Length: 193
Image: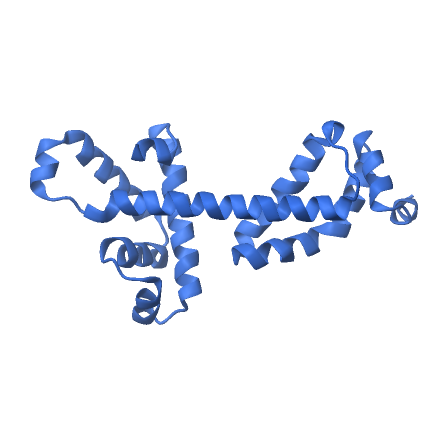
């Protein structure tokens, strides 16, 4: 039975996937997963994020199988991977810049705190979220966002690569984003507005 699917072309498999054939879907997944993961990782430089986007692509293929017409499956899936990777990078860049603007004055001066209880509550929320981060991620965040060190400067101080610094910053921004949505019930960008 498995050999039957291995002999089929990608497009033949996708026609079966459109008919809800799980075995054909699994064959396409096995054919493309590793190559797709490596392709995405070239853009994102993070195994964890690449794995997430890779899974999202396969999930989207399954969920939208009935509405999708594919001429060439390989080209389709890699185009989708590139688009989703760029979308993620664009979103991460905007959110990091917005969070950076918000945190420029962190921690706040006492006058600001006394004048604005809501601001104090939010800063306490951020402090609590920071306390949940792994120590190295928290340290990187504080160097880059509170002490305004560049990734290269933070890397020299901690004796790690600037790529590792970037990974810690992406992780910290992701934690802050998720905590804001979960704890305050709103997306991070709405809070920044």
